[in-house]
Image 1 (cartoon, rainbow over the protein chains, first blue to last red):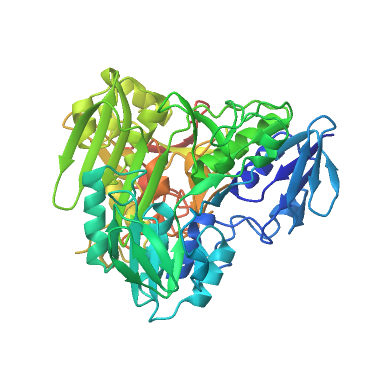
Image 2 (cartoon, helix red, strand yellow):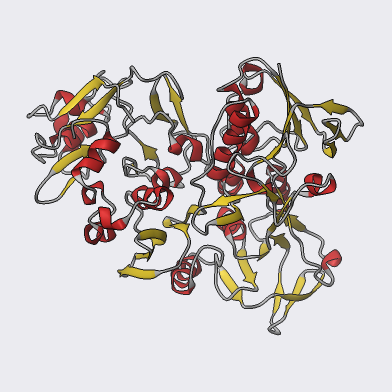
Length: 410
Length: 152
C-alpha cells in the first residue's frame, strides 16, 4: 500500500487520480485543494459568463468522483512546505501528511505587473478561477465599461464572455497583436478584425502607464475610462514548493517524460510543470488543459508503479471567438505553406521532412490529422504531402499506413 | 481504458467502398430522431457522423475508432467526452463547441453539428437503429461491425 498526496485539485490532479487508479485500485489518495470546489473545467469560466454553461455542467467529473476513486480531499487547505527527507507535505493547518509518492499540480497564478496607481482602481479582477468569474460577474452591469489588460488567450476569452452583457469592452496589450503567444501578425490581424467587428476596441503596442481611479492613462497618451478592470497579463507557474525544498525549477518545475521532478518521489504536472515539448526538442511549460490531463495521468501511472511516458507533448490550442476558430499547434519554423481565402487562413510549417507546426483560422476540418503528424513525427516523404497540405485527409497516407491506423482490412 | 479488446467496432474495406456516400445519409437519418427518411434528409444539409474520404483512386468511410487510449477524451476542456463500455460518447449538454477534440483526433473522425456542438459516432447503440446504420445500409458490405484483435 502506498500513500499518495496530490497538491492541487485541477485537471492535472484528476488525470493523476485516474492514472493511479488504472494501476493501483486501493491505496489512499489525499488531495490538497486550495479552491473550495471539486475539480471543474477551468477554461469554461468565460463560457459561464457568456451563459453557455453553468456551475453544474462545469463540473469536470461526476459528483461521486472522489468517493468512487477513494480520495480524501482537503478543501480550503494549502500545501505550505514539502519535506523530501522525511517524505511529508505540510498543509496550512499545520498537519504533516506523509507520502510515498507526491504530485505537485499547483497550477499557475496571475502575474500582475506593478502598475502605478493600481491601488486606486475600485473594481479590479483576475480571470483564472471560478471564484474570479463569479466576483467579476457581480461587478458587471449592462452599462459597464470594461478594460482588459492583456490580449492573450485569457483576456480575449474573458472579453468574448462578457461582451454581450456589458456596455463596452476595451483590450490593451504591450504586444503589437492579439493572441501573440499563438498567432503571427497576419493571423492575429484577421482575428482582431473579426473581434473589432463584434464591438471590441483594442489598444495594441500600448500599456497602462498609470491608473487614476477609473481612468487608465496609456503610454501612448490615450486616456481610457472604465468601470471594471480585468488583469490578464499572464500567468506564472506555481513552482515555489519544489524550489523551496531544493528541486530544479526553471519557468516551471522541471520534469522528465515520466513527469518526475529532480527529487525522487515528487512529480509535477499541468501549468506548474515544465516538461518535454517535442516541437522544440526541449522543455517548456505547456499550460493547456489537454496536456495537464495527460501529464497528470502519466504522473499517476508512474507514481503507482506503472509505466507511461509523456513524450508527444506539444503546444496546441483550439480557440474560437464568436464563431471564428483558430487552431494552432507546434512550432512556427521552417518552410511555410500557405492558403488564404477571404474567410480562412492556413499556414503549415515544414522542416526536415516533418510538419512542425500550423495555424488554421476558419478551416478546422479534420485538423487533428495535422496535429498527429507533428506529435508522431511522421516523415512527410512517406505521405502525399501535396494532397495533405490542401486537405487534412488520411487519403494522403499510404494504403499500408491507413490499414495500420484504421485497424485491419482497409 | 483497458480490456476493450473484444469490443466491436466499425471497419471499412477500401477496396469494396464504392464512394456512394449512402452511409452518410443512413447515419444522418438514424441520428435524426425522425421515422421518415424524406422528412429527415430532403432539401437540407446533412451532418453525418461518418464521412467518405478519398481521391479518384480510392474511397473509404471514416467514423470514430473508439480508441483504447482516446486523446479526445483526455483533451476535452468541458469534460463532455467520456468512454463507457468501450464506446466514446459526447454529452452535448456539456459541450461548448471549442473543437479541441477536432484539433486532436488523429483520424479526422470528429465534426460538429449544424449548431457547432460536437456529435460523434456512438455506434447507433442509443438511437432507434440499435446497430450501426452505416453498416446495415452499405450496399457493397464495405463497412462491417465486428471484433478484431488488432484494433486501435
